[in-house]
Image (tube, rainbow, N blue to C red; front, side, top):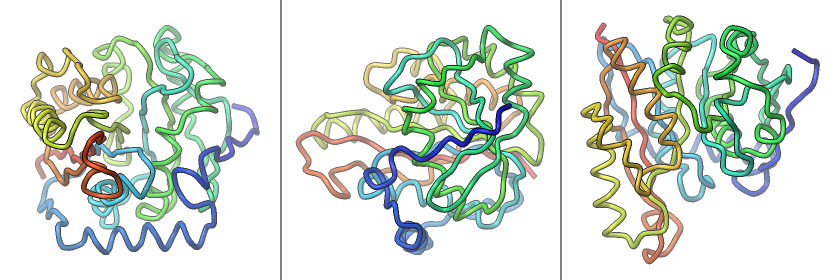
Length: 270
């Protein structure tokens, strides 16, 4: 690992660049989500699916997921998001030592380097993809505000074997590790069509129905990461829960061309 810092690229566009404004916005979104907060009971939180659009669009849905972290403690977050800007074979790991956001620095876990060393066909350096990608960056301030200090394994996921990737990750996941998948749902359908398609997608995730999801006809931009998570869930007997659904027509956009957002939790019986 080098001593480099991966600086924020999307602050000021997807989310506020000013630290105070950013922190207050996330705190307000968490307050709005408090009334819908799911009680996990004795179940152990293992993973989250969170959306990654501009906060004005997907922030309320993301908050319904990260509000659960206020009662949790994790030392490490494995964060997987899709490659929107520069394609990648397998999953891109970072050679940076730190990811920086307006809320501060997040040290990278050595687990990323270990994955690259043990499974070089699945995990590779791709600096261009990592530096350009927003799907990881926009999740981080929510994690910082709700979880506090943690180390990070950032993975920009491209075309890869989802089952083998899950098998590589599974031994690393214990009580101190949270898995987070960054994904939006359908894109640019009219409001009613989006709600219909997104409900089908969310139900398939809840049912662990991989076959329905593998025909990814505008279901989710982070579908590869979702499939990896479903393999992990099957291996570890995690159960999916829907926390919140909305689309951009519910928040800050018109209803002719919307993007869908879902927040989901995966838990293990206590």
